[in-house]
Length: 68
Image (cartoon, rainbow, N blue to C red):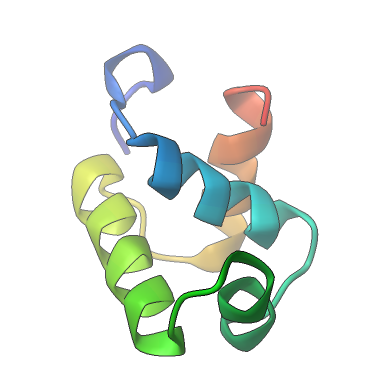
């Protein structure tokens, strides 16, 4: 995992990650922000690529670390 100081997430990626910390599913996140489930998946793939994180639990931990 990359250190939190080196993670540069876009505003939309941050929004997607915040929804994950609230327990939203891909479909729930898509509905809440008006995008497709496929697009949510794409954002999460980019977040994983940027951070080197592979599990949802680790992504939530990252969000908490970043204060989301």
